[in-house]
Image (cartoon, rainbow, N blue to C red; front, side):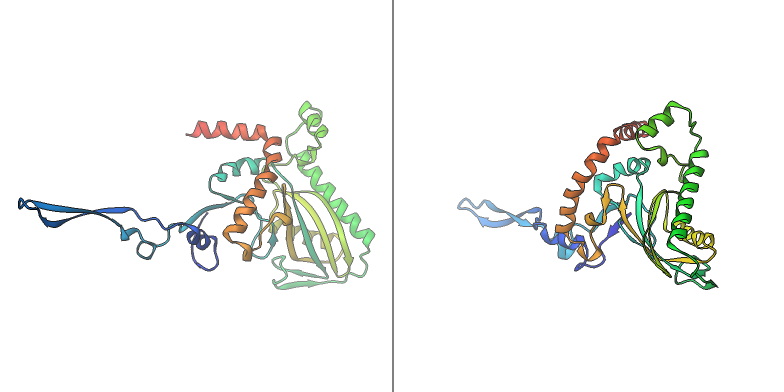
Length: 290
């Protein structure tokens, strides 16, 4: 997406325009300067700034930035790490998505209620008891849900478990990342805090989005012979990027963004090295399409 300048006091473009040195092209002005002793016309040549290009006339130098979402999945009711590309880095978006990097979440769950849209602000359609749910039972159901998700994706991914490809993936520790195209998959899940009716769950997934996580929590509640709703979803990790590498919206200034871009270059280097094959194939695709 292309982000336009809307608030000069808030967005990065205001800092970018403020830091840009004012440069105006020159206009050559030729005017009469009287006559010489031989009664010949003299001309005066001057260079003046072309005020047509002044920011007060033409507007700011920078009024648009090429910023694109690399990996989505978050909606307006969830929060956390959202990877963006700036400028020419957009050429790596396809490779980043094809690498199938896991994303990690912290989900705050409330037991005892269910809503029509799986969101805490939805209409309550069910209230149930939750006192029969113990920590051991909760962990057992979560483990079963994770195992079922892995088995489903592995069985229907089309990968022959007796093949050399399956062996190589198992040796590399990537067998669990084998999944159907765009099919959500739960890689791991564990309970961080158990204090019914409030539970904090950590979950690592592939190809998921916020809607899938809310539906999973609802299914988890029904599996526990109760009900549950996810009232807070926070993505803490997206591939190699964590919340420590992220900028809050109020930190979107030119200095902070430039510093973050430098740090991200170091973070992404191992990814580029480990996914060189994907990047090479992507480069071949780009050549084929141009």
